[in-house]
Length: 130
Image (cartoon, rainbow, N blue to C red; front, side, top):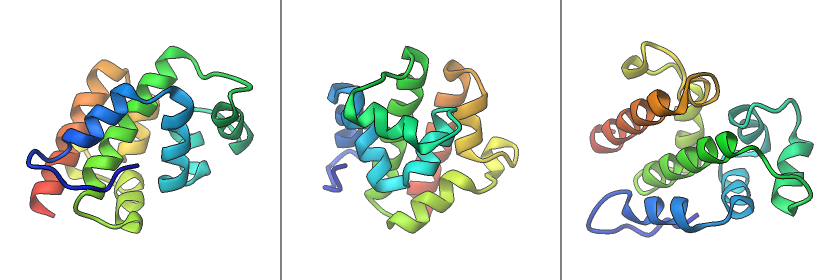
């Protein structure tokens, strides 16, 4: 996951989230957020599935891939200004912009067309305000 700043916050993370193969997205998230959190966002019960996705022995559904691409973008956006521990905490913590639900829960449980934009907006706000 790139940590290089750009003139436009999140631009590099967005480009990577669109261009990288699903296995690369999962590997980047696993390295940054940890396998357990990736498994949670991917709505699987164990980290073995995450390892299988990285190795290419199994593929997540298109819906899960989209959810993970969104999480990758958000993690990259936040990583431009925050450390790994803060980003992990942000994904897991209650967020007042998300009606006190965690971003990870939103990405996992809510439809992507509503959860994605809401979580991205909350991440942008956090990145801008700290």
